[in-house]
Image 1 (cartoon, rainbow, N blue to C red):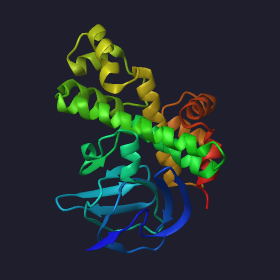
Image 2 (cartoon, one colour; image 1 turned 90 degrees about the vertical axis):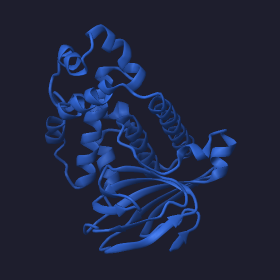
Image 3 (tube, rainbow, N blue to C red; image 1 turned 60 degrees about the vertical axis):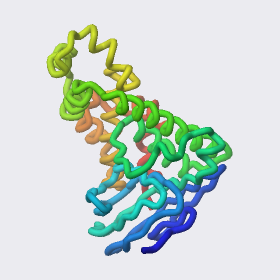
Image 4 (cartoon, rainbow, N blue to C red; image 1 turned 180 degrees about the vertical axis):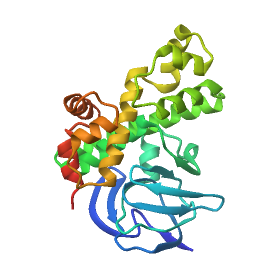
Length: 272
């Protein structure tokens, strides 16, 4: 089994960026068939920015598509296959020294994690955008967003260790299933089996934002996924409508607030 060294990945590098123990590599996998079983020297995040593929680990398989976000611990064996014609991914390779100098317990992040939280994804959308901007402030922004991701993962892990209430998953699933709709608070409370007042008090403790903010993050996540799946699409009005925004101007304002640039600028950055 092949061991890949620091910031080594299969595919063709289209962009490489290094800062303080972090290496960001955006790779293309055009006309790839498969990658053999391998593992990485360092832990890394993998953000699929285009296409689809299957990643196989010892006990499970993952079908990845544009917008998928994973965390892989170092020395975690896996292989990849079933690539679509055009696949691309952003890998953020994290050296142990980066964790150590920031007093983060590296061992706390073992195994493989599929990161579906829209709060985490919003940070990676910004990291991906900073890679396109690449100016004198990008290194600060990239590291800050990654630290916020790690901090959020630690908080969530603490909640998991303390046994997250069953209503949290019920509410999350409801919001994802109906993110384009105008959902009433009483409907969410019924699904959670909680009094509306108590639900409003508890929601920020587990979702780290308000109801409205969480739904907006889901809508932005879905909009970015659509852009990644078809980087040549220019019909932003259609994307806005399909993702639950009342109009294009509302979509543009919310997108810029969460991603840092307008949808059009972000979309242009996806084009080769």
